[in-house]
Image (cartoon, rainbow, N blue to C red; front, top):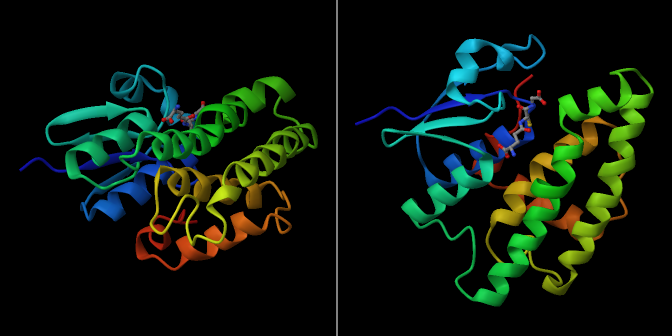
Length: 205
Ligand SMILES: N[C@@H](CCC(=O)N[C@@H](CS)C(=O)NCC(=O)O)C(=O)O
């Protein structure tokens, strides 16, 4: 049996997504920390794992995978986790909410992008993060309003949308973004916080 190894950085939201998914799948895994602040992701050793120089990287079932959404898809389809509904319409809606965060919001707030755009200087870097994160969360809130009072973003169980949202909320708090007025998001956050899979994935200090 191959050991499952996650190349991870605690505060990386893409890594956090994969930790949640592995926990939801009940898969035991070992974490190898790639320290982004020490630029370990730019080392030859890590570039050999992922030519993009990003975390996460996941070794599982004798394969090595990069890109958190591809990893989540692999876990979902190989373990039948129902991260996406079968109904094509509901499926497209869940993907749209998840991608609003993972495909549109997250990349502009990546360390290297924000650092390049602001010279890594404060307060410019914090302003950059706030400029993008709050509107991104407002859009997510609007995208999930049709699910009304459902405990999770798109229904009665966590989906890809929740797996992408919760790490982004961690980032929002980190950069001082107020989302207390976004009631659906706050409701979903509480539902996820009650689940061990989400709790144990929370970034360790
Ligand atoms: N699309 C990639 C993005 C991965 C990504 O941006 N990882 C960040 C941490 S959340 C990273 O490694 N950043 C290093 C850098 O920006 O240099 C995924 O979803 O896996």
